[in-house]
Length: 261
Image (cartoon, rainbow, N blue to C red; front, top):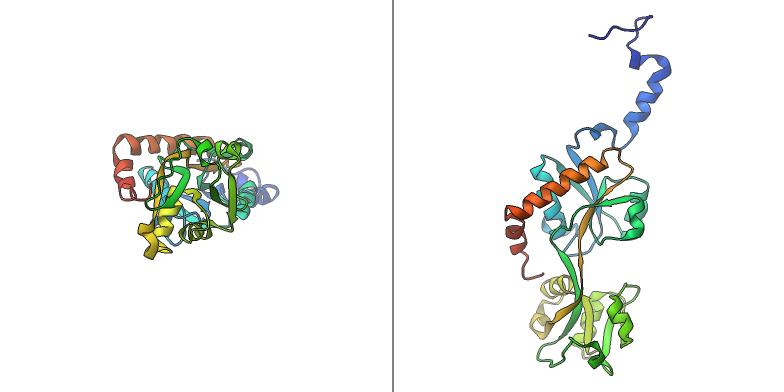
């Protein structure tokens, strides 16, 4: 047993060091630095991938939670608007974030996991019965393509310089397509299918997805680099995600959402 220093106070309780201990305890990650029983993660509203209104927080959240459960860790998931979430992640207000694309610029403060096994498939929705072929974008000249204002579109689409009509969101874009105001809607397939099953149920049979997708962007979870244990946590989480894949458990989980993906 360690002896107390002269004066009878245990070393860490010496008055000159008490403030240091209290300061460390106040840090959001201090209590779980050695064993993260719970990860506090954030996500934005991006159904069906992440959403506070969906079972398990959405597909990406379910995959992340399944991987963490294999490690014996819990996951606490909160929802924030995307801009606010990024700002809070840079301030290390969270342990990490669920459901985002890899972005080189954000590597300053985020360490990305291996892909979750889910990709955002960006492509075209059309009215049922359409004969439009989307393999060659040059053949779409003369058509009006619906896009969403302020969205980042695939480079191949931007290079094609097609005529476009902007909507304020994906729902508005699909409604324009249903009304015949545009010829095609550029959209994430999962988002479109989710909207057709929730907000546009009566018109679900009126729209179809056209293969192939223009871009497929894998979704990741990422951990905040400021956490002193982020490297070990990332290695553990990546190992668990790999086990989830190799065991077949990931395929089983995603099969429940196959109609969206």
